[in-house]
Image (cartoon, rainbow, N blue to C red):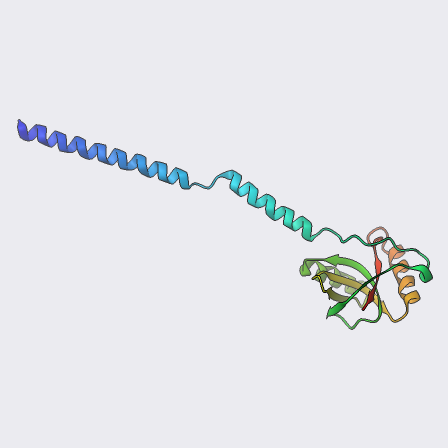
Length: 161
C-alpha cells in the first residue's frame, strides 16, 4: 500500500512539474511574440523615409523671358550622359538614384540627350539639355515646359559652378 501511495505521489509530482514547465514555456513564448504595433511603427517609419526621398526640391519660380530667367547655382558632377556646359535645363531632382536614372532613360527614349548629374548634397539632377549660353538654356526650358505640359512645369535652370 505504501508503494502505491509513493508511486501516486511521484506521478502527481511529475505531472505538476510538467504542467509548470508548460505554463512557463507558454509565458516565455508569448512575451517573445512580436507585437503588431512594432511592425506598424517600422512600416510607417519606412514609408515616411520613402516619402522624404521622393519629395521634390523647392526651386525658385523662373520667369518666362530668357534674359531675366532665374538660375540656381550649384556645383554638379556628371554621373551619366554626354557632358555638361555652363547652363542646364533640370527636369527632375531626386535623392534616390534609381528614380533619377528611370527619368533619364525615359527622356532618352523620347529623343533627348539627357544627362544625370549629382550635386554636393547628394541630389541627382536629371538634365534635359545643356548650353553654354543662358538665353539658349532658358528658351529650351520654356520649350520643355510647353511640350510636356503639365509634367515638367517645375523645370528650372542650373548654372554649374
